[in-house]
Amino acid sequence: MTTKPMLHPRNQHREGYDFARLVAQTPELEAFTLKNPLGGTTIDFKEAAAVRMLNRALLKTHYGIGFWDIPARYLCPPIPGRVDYIHYLADLLAESNHRAIPRGPQIRALDIGTGANLVYPLTGQSEYGWSFTGVDIDPDAIRSAQDICRANALDITLRYQPRREDIFKGVITPDDLFHVTLCNPPFHASPEQAQKGTRRKWRNLGKTPSTQLNFGGQNAELWCPGGEIGFIATMIEQSMDVAEQCLWFSCLVSKKDNLDPLYRLLKRARVAEYRTVDMAQGQKTSRFLAWTYYPERQRSL
Image (cartoon, rainbow, N blue to C red; front, side, top):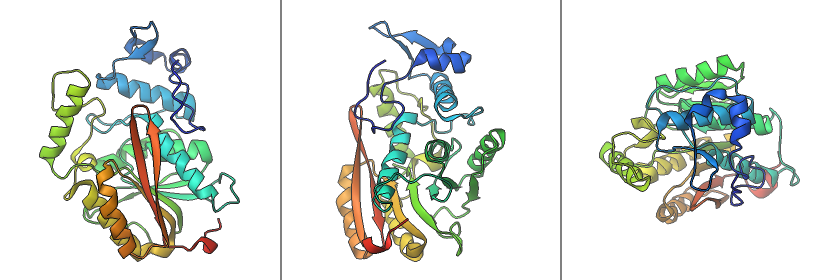
């Protein structure tokens, strides 16, 4: 196994993939394994079916998810990086909990764009026991997430957002109180831009460009008007209306150049504090932007 020291210290995947253990838990994975040039075991990450089977094995082995599947062509996210987001959010909440990592169902998290894969609620509930509410604009994604919950007897609330232009409106009820929101936003501004990004990723993976990618993704998962910065700008604007119903709002930001304009929007929204949390994962640095309307003295969990 190859150590990945740049992942969060609590990330179960810091030591890489233990394929012997994964195959023991999910024997179907063995058909997708192969030897890398150093003689170690791996899979062909350019093959969608292999990536899906690896995710299934990871979720079963590390997070106790006996059944996991998604419809064809839906986003199949890399588990280690997604879990890192959860761990760093736990660190953020610990600052208001006497530096202790908060655990248990009293911690309520809202996952915007939870997707057909439901990865954030699955891993976050397993690692910390938090209560999750997942929201999505795609009814098929919601149905897939419901199937996963039923098959694993999981208590995760799922809500359909019928209005594509809304993020918090209509899905946060007057009685809701959340400690944290999280989101992996659509990165692109149009289907054409998403397709261009897909072709670039295929080339980076050393394969002939195609209309498909090993990690997949439907339109709602990949693009929205205004792209990433437009989506997060709407999120910031709408967060003002539910400022007292969430301790920390957060969202992944893929493009570092988007941060400065988002900082300006947060200042205009008169948030009490905002910060960017870097997450170094392998050869790239990911990050999320977090903001709160609560002054520090009022943030106790």
